[in-house]
Length: 260
Image (cartoon, rainbow, N blue to C red):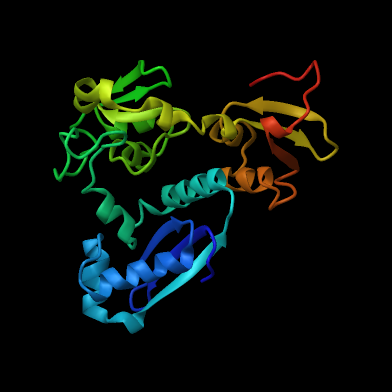
């Protein structure tokens, strides 16, 4: 692994269980992981237990992809997590269930600091919040929100647990948490990167197809893969299923181009 920014994976060679993460310096991140694991102080207790059981020689650290763009790195990490968090053989989802939402709060102001508990999908109400702090939707649990919004439960849960800032253009919180801590949450920080997710799709000849406010919306309307849209927008992939994709701020619009 090089001294570069990117996504990485830790694989248990015995059972193929794995852990996915990101870092601005993958080599240093590997060193930190190994230091914690060797000293039995790793933050992910499930990975630590497996390391203790099988031994260091049965774990490999690999770079998934080197990515210098911070926005792209965040997007690709989340796409990877959305794909794997419903699988049983990853260490990420085990650890995620024990984290609580605390973005924008210091330890002394966060009432959930050091609290542990799973966000049960049908028992804890969640709210969808826009960049102004308005609650635009309220649901009785993750499964209801996922079904109605057509968003993966893991994406919403990541927001509610504080691991991800926003999910496809909105912030998500446990309802009680948001009501009690609204004034202390830094919404500006949560939404500061949303503009980069607006995308433009053209055909292979450069003819305008549509402008979408989120990658997910473009994916749904045109039946495209979200990860491939991101890859095209970043220039790492030329086309996807007969389309070209661009971040809107890098595209020259004409008068008859419209939003979707």
